[in-house]
Each structure stands twice: as C-alpha cells, then as structure tokens.
Length: 200
Image (cartoon, rainbow, N blue to C red; front, side):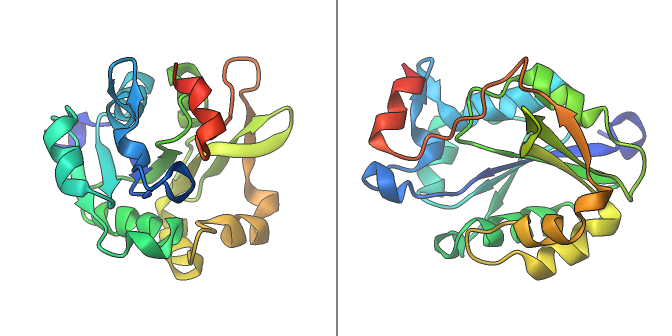
C-alpha cells in the first residue's frame, strides 16, 4: 500500500503488557467475543479509518502472533516491555518513522469499551503534524490520543515507566483539543480480576 492512498494518521495499538495484576496473563491474549483482545482492538482502529495499524507486542509476543489474526498490521516487538508503557510508546513511535504517517492515534489494548465511533471522532481532530488531541469522558482526558509527528521526539524523550505520554501532555495541556466521547464509549481498563466482568 503506498503512502498516497493511506490515511495520514497511523493507528498505534499498545498491547505489550504482561497483566501483572491479572496473575501474569498478557492483556493481548485475554478472550473477548471468542477471540484475543488484541484482535478486537486492532479491528477498532481499522473500523475507525486507520489504514495503517502498528501493534506493539511484548509479553508472550510469540503466542500473540500465533493466536491473533492481525494480518495487514505491522507488528512491533518491544523487548523492554517490562519497563512499562513508556517503552512501548517509544517503540511504536520509532516504528512509524519513514512511513509517511503525519500523526499517530494511540490506543490501549485493555479498553474494549472504546469502539470505532469514539476513535473516529479523535481521528477527525487531525489538522497537521502539530496536532494534539485526546478523547475526553465527561470532560476528563482519556484515550485514544492523537499525536502529530512534530510531537513524537518530545513524547519519546519523556516517556518512561508506566507514565507513557502523561508528562508531555501535561506540559502541553493548552494545545490539546479535547474530543468528548462519553456519549459513545466507556473508558474502563481491564487491570484486575474484577475487571474481567467487562469481557463477558
């Protein structure tokens, strides 16, 4: 697929976590609608309009590749996944270099309550490589987030541990376009055993 006929915004799915609070079950492999959760999350990005989707894998990446149907996605291995989400964000942004993508729409594998409609709204906030946008739920910033390419180096430099882009976004709060999605999505995370009820 050539750059000319793809969306200028690439989908970037962070799916490397080992599920520490889930007894060491990688979130990418949790069953959802009889398929691995990572497959559903990648499908949401595609349905929202991302023609290029990069998926960052870490914990049991070999098993994820085996079990999940991710044809057409670029699979990015993060050998440092145990260091936290920041390392996955850095790996994902690095994988987009040279692809022609002008922005990255970043989503998390463990938020199945956020569907294509919400993601498409955030995608629609793209204006240029300087764009910064985020879904909001009753006015509170959440995921997915859109990072124009002009911000990638700064985000990568500040993404450490489990903070991801939090520090960068806090420093650039006034530039962020908030896109209300609370009417079409539920922004819960699958973090603990109790949260697994959301996957039933």
